[in-house]
Image 1 (tube, rainbow, N blue to C red):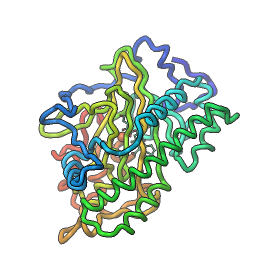
Image 2 (cartoon, rainbow, N blue to C red):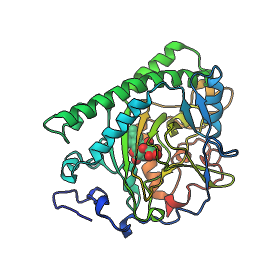
Image 3 (cartoon, rainbow, N blue to C red):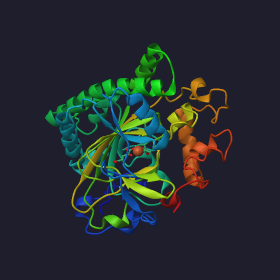
Amino acid sequence: MSAPSQLSKDPHNNYFDFGAARQVPETHTWEGLYEHPLVDGGVGAVEDAVPVVDLRDPHAAEAVARASEQWGTFLLEGHGIPSELLARVEARIVSVFALPASEKMRAARQDGQSHGYGLPPIASYFPKTTWSEGYTMSPANLRAELRKIWPDAGEDYRHFCDVMEEFHRQMLAVVDKLTVLFLAALGVAGVEAGRKIVETMSETVTMHINWYPKCPDPKRTLGLATHTDSGFFTFLMQSHVSGLQLFRREPDRWVGVPPGALIVNIGDLFQILTNGRFRSTYHRAIVNRDSTRVSVAYHLGPPADAKVAPLREAVGGGKPAYRTVTWREYFLVRKEAFTTGGSALQMVSLSPGDHDDDGDGADQISEISS
Ligand SMILES: C=C1C[C@]23C[C@@]1(O)CC[C@H]2[C@@]12CCC[C@@](C)(C(=O)O1)[C@H]2[C@@H]3C(=O)O
Ligand SMILES: O=C(O)CCC(=O)C(=O)O
Ligand SMILES: [Fe+2]
């Protein structure tokens, strides 16, 4: 482990040289990772196959509704993003993380900042460090952000920015199509309403890239801690190496998501917006001995200070299940939830207990609180 003196005093922000690691040090060992069985969520699996939604399917809105209610996650097909572009995105992500530590650390996330290189925000809520590096950036500010790493704006800089901007442009078209389906699934009328939502979300897109290096002892550590995404919804593009797992109840188990697919995750604010009809999903990433894995999460949500409350169409004749929150406020609630071992969704619920977000009255799942 190297901890050059110019780096942050925060132990989560010190540089750990994964390439040189011959074992998993205490700082990176997690307990209770395999308390629940792991099952295959591949397309062939019978019980646990992760739902698939094909955007070309005339019944896609029903499939979106079913998957969002029952799983909170689905594999997206027919999205039209060329696999050749996804391969270029992957190659560019690999190239950033391959840079020397001193260059990456120029963009290190500072305390409380939403953007930057290093561990993701939730990392600071855990006593242990994960086997990964990350970098959060927003397309709106991509070029300025990446100048921190590549101040001379050379060829690598241009390649990275060009590819990520192309990915962003193409993703916006997918966001457009999926939003129409979500609104149809919720019975919200109006193309105009949809346009406005897409426009607003497109201005606040955040991309978080993840790099999970090979690990000499993968069973003892974790790539990304168990969490739900907090926004409206997230697209996740992962390389052809497995690692993403979804937590499912009754019986408690981890479902391994097949690698290579584009994944959609419902986030907590969408659960609030839909009055609990669509569910956010607990998920985590594990690492492996033989292959490095990368992923890019494309997070969509409202502006930080916009009020989010259950939709009239979702509440119907009933009662709103959640109070009104802003994303900024929800981050604080979630921080408190992580530090007290509670559930952020329960903390904003108007009838605590009734809307336990993972179904059994227990607040969080094992390794979160260990
Ligand atoms: C828009 C965002 C969602 C995110 C927090 C952030 O401001 C930028 C990083 C995102 C990420 C990626 C890894 C997991 C996660 C929980 C985290 O700590 O950082 C998510 C955040 C989230 O969904 O709340
Ligand atoms: O790498 C993965 O598969 C998970 C990434 C993730 O959940 C996230 O970035 O929010
Ligand atoms: Fe996530």
